[in-house]
Amino acid sequence: MQSDESFTLPINVDPNVTPDAPDHAQPTIGLIGMGAMGRMYAKLLSQAGWKKILVCDVPEKYEKLKADFANTPGVHPQKDGYAVSRSSDYIIYSVEAEFIDRVVAQYGPSTKVNAIVAGQTSVKAPEIAAFEAHLPKDVHILSCHSLHGPTVSPVGQPLVLIQHRSTKDALTLVENILRPFRSRFVYLSFEEHDSVTANTQAVTHAAFLSFLPSRLSNSMGTAWASAEAYPWEQGLYVGGIETAKVNLTLRIYSNAWHVYAGLAILNPSARTQIHQYAKSASELFKLMLSGGSGSLEDRAKFKERVEWARRTVFGEWGVGASTIIEEEEDNSKARTPSPPSDPSRSPSPTNKRKPILLSTTILDRFSMGTPHAGSMTVPESPTSTSIQLPATLEPPSTYRPNSHLSLIAMVDCWAHLGINPYTHLQLAATPIFRLFLGVAEHLFQSPTLLRSAVHSAMYDHWHRADDLEFVVAARGWSQCVSFGSFEVYRRRFEETRQFFEPRFDEAGKLGSEMIKAVMETEVKREEEERMRSGI
Image (cartoon, rainbow, N blue to C red; front, side, top):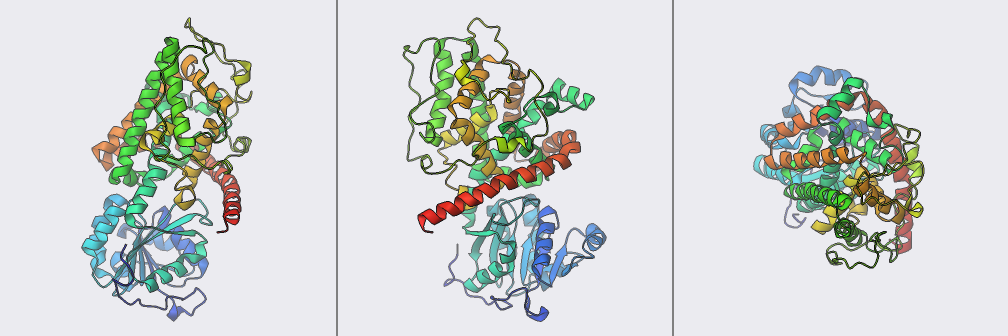
């Protein structure tokens, strides 16, 4: 990040300008790219009272853009990026990460002298490289990134500002332009941004992208599509934390594919994490199989792997000294110790911290299905090593136990990479990551739920085929990302998206309400923590 002292350049308007200023004193704001996020910014800026907002998309969308914003005060569609770039005092490129270099190369040289230029891509390294390569030297580079989707309220959400090549006055102006969003400004370098987004988004997206494709492969997907049936309508994956997994997965697939492709393919840290997630899922599944049909030692290996991940990521928070390593058959048998936790790699959260999900009953209000009668019965394993689940380990009667492989693999991945998911929670976590962490936290901090998941993973067969397809999907996404092909990513994403598209409206409404409910409690919790710490 270049300091104010090392870069001197004026800006074109008073940095303390507000939307109440007369038109001639207001900055001209330019938006190049009018996808979902570009449109969100245009509407929010208009609602704030800014009067001179120039917007453009590809030339063939010009007439539609004029029609769409005909009644939006202050928004003036332009034919192309040249008109926006040469006239605007503050310019935001809201284009796909795959095309940022090409678009900036086309319109960047026309940038108005002393203007401030930003980008909204999810990966900043290629964005900054494009700016440095194609923008004139007499412009500021001060990028941004709203860490939430276009359907989520920006109030209280993190909005990253990256002062790469700009002055203090330029930063003040940008803050004043965006302040009406009521977002929380987070100041990072572009390198810090890419590290944070990899830690809070990459594996989360990989988990959800794999979750539904695992239930769409081969004959299962064909059967469901032919019957126009969805798993939650069959009483499967319904209630509690399943509600969050299904709703958030559908929410991701309802968005444009490029939102996630850029982060996954262009961010090296993200590729590493997605690879480890697939590896964790594969190794855990193999341990599940050997544990369910093998010896006491085989069962202990799976349990110890899960317990190690729990201790490494969450420590003893919420469970005291209890563990899930409790063999029903022989508690006295010696076992190989699991890998030791390294506090310096992934410290557990403080004991004073409240959990993100105080209760999963809040999620039941947003379920897309209901459990079928009798669906909570745990089927017996046909193997001779079947162990009856003790009554004390029974999950709530409204939920059907399953392996929760996607969540266990997530925590295992964090543990292997030394990632502390709480580090960036308050700094720059997206609503999806916050809720997903809350779901994982709830599972791993509840001995009853975790033990029932471990037991179900090894001995229940009703979800075994789904778990297999999940592993295949996770590895497939990892390979897809390693190829570095946006086209392969797009085809894989859209093939799955098409089947679930009829349910996006319902899932979008439920998902937004679910995130709002959880975020309200999170905002309150963070305010209480700030008051206690005197911040």
